[in-house]
Every structure is written in C-alpha cells, then in structure tokens.
Length: 431
Image 1 (cartoon, rainbow, N blue to C red):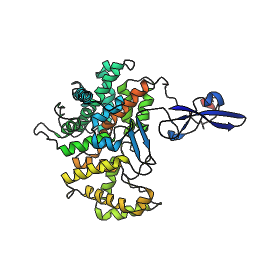
Image 2 (image 1 turned 90 degrees about the horizontal axis):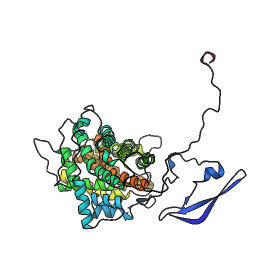
Image 3 (image 1 turned 135 degrees about the vertical axis):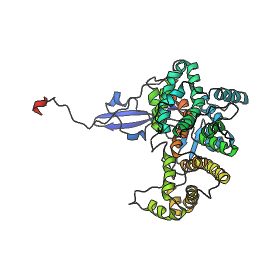
C-alpha cells in the first residue's frame, strides 16, 4: 500500500476536505477517511461494510469481476491442483511456499499435535447427545484456552506460534469428535502415520469393531475441500476474528468467535442449504418445475449453490471442486442416490441454459462441496464444521497479521442513531 499523493475532495456545508487516496498492490484505490471525523465532524454510513476497507493485508486477494482468488499471490486453482492443504497452511501463515525441509518440519509439528487433552473428553460429554456439532465446536474451541493456558499470551511470539499449530492440528480432532458424539459413537484417536485429510476421515468413520481404510480419492477430495476453503479475505467470520482479536482476546477465544459467525446460514451454511434444496427437488423429473420457479421474479424460491456475492463471473474454486466431485461420484456412484442424480442433471442444465449463462449463475464451490460431502456419508450438520476446520488457518493467519500490525486499534464501528432525542425521566405514577 502506498500514498499516491492523489486526494479526493469532499465538500459539504461550508467544509471542504482533501482526503488522501491510497493505492494497493492490486484492486481499486482506497480513500483514507481515518481523520474524517476529527477534521469534518462527520462519519460515513456503510451497512455491511461493503465499500469500506477495515484493514490492509498481504494474505488473500479476490477480484470478483474476473473470478480470481490469490493466496500470497498464488492462484487458488494452481494451489488446489499442485499443492496440498498443509503446504497452503504454511503459505498463509508465513508468506512464502516452504522448502522441502520446511514443509517436512511443519507437517511433523502439525501431525504430532493432533491429540486433544484427555480431560477434554469430559467437556464433550457435557453436551446433550443431540447437540449440533457446530454448538459443540464453538464451546470446545473457546475452552481450549482453559486446557492450553501456556499459549494464550498474545504478546509472546512463541506462544502465538504454539497456539497457531495447536489450532490447525487439533481442529480436525475436535470436528470429528463432535460428529462422533452427535451420532453416539466412540471417539477415534488420531494417527500420526496418516496425512491430514486421511486422518480426519478415519476419525469420522472408523469404529472400534472395524477400522476404516481411507480411499486415496476421497482423501484427495477432502484435502481439496480444505484447500479451497482455507481463506477468503475479509468475509464475515474473518472480520469477526479480527474484531475479537483487536480487544486483545486470546487466540482460542478469537477463533471460537469465527466459528460462531460461520455458523450462520448466509455464510458457512451455504453448502448445507444447497443440499437441502436438492433434496427438496427430490427427483430429476421435477427439475424443470424448479428451474421455472427460479426464473419467476414473483416466486421467492432461489436456486442455492449458483452464483456468488463476490464473484460476478465465476467462482475460481468451483472448477477444481467440480473435478473432485466427478472423481468422487465416479468412485461411489450415483445410481442409487436420487439427490446426487438431481445434482448432476441440475448442473448440466445450469451450464447450458441461456438464462443462467446470461446472469452468470454458474455452480459455485458450495454446490460441489455439498455433493462431495453427502456422497462421502457426512450428514448436512457436519458441512459447516468441516468448513470451520478448513478456514481455521485463514483465521489464524489474519489474527497473526493483525496482532503484528503497528496500526492495531480496537475495533469500534460508528452508527447512524435514529432513536429518541434527549428527554426527561417520568416517574412511574405519572406515565
């Protein structure tokens, strides 16, 4: 980011201000309004912060108009095709791709921290048996500060590093145990001889009576899901993590705040909503009915999993995810699964229908990830926990960047007050 020496002139009443314009390394210029209130005694009004940069960052860049997602400058499609999740984790955390030796060391540290404190089993068992896995994850992640108090001092660089590794390593175990608890099965401990994705799948699907041999195609598909969800710039949950961390809260509390925000159906629940829509359609012969409803402006029905708020052309993650979906469905088959049959036919129609092409309503990453997870055997209640697991490294990277920022200030958005004006208290007997 640099000061371009250009300014924007703002005029109102008898006041005229020259506001600096900052130029990023990519993306549109930014008008610096940090001194707007001090100089002009006015605020800006931007619900949802859709036109406001809350920070500067070097981690992730999105160009929604051309369908581009970069992590530290590397295109997401290249990372998803040529790399794997833990290598992308290293890139997000430290800024550069690791050497072979650095990657081996990083993978060793993560793999050997996947165990949870044994007393945390008691914490899981304190939840109702029918508790949603996301409810369990919010509580357990927040409680990590009680079980790992030696990595909560945000002023200590080494403790920040330990907390980062612990969160990345233990989140698959937390998610898998939340799943196991919700279905009444015994917890499965992690194994150090498996890679990150395979280990997670085994913890989810193995049982004491019969081990689970991880299919490499499914492990690769899961690794891609993790990679494609690793970070996505200043979305709602990431902004929540940053806002929580601006107060000086410990890392586990900040990540728990991100998990809670992700739980919202408008954010992390999109792939679940997509699969529920496919089940509502039910059978292939009903697809034309729902296509017609989607085109009807007077019908509130919307096709979930198509288009994206940020990507105005296509979701760059969707192409890679489609490849994984095809591989998984070829492996597991769709003949006896009506939901997956509907998904395949709906995808075909959407890619060919002029209405969808004109409005650029292409299948997005949520459409394909929901199909993959359903085919693997995950219930929809696990879709968002898996998203949270994958996004943890993005949250941590953003948290670490913010903690190190010399411009760090506690977040304090302003408001446009439209309530009652000053009035005097009236005694109860006179009301």
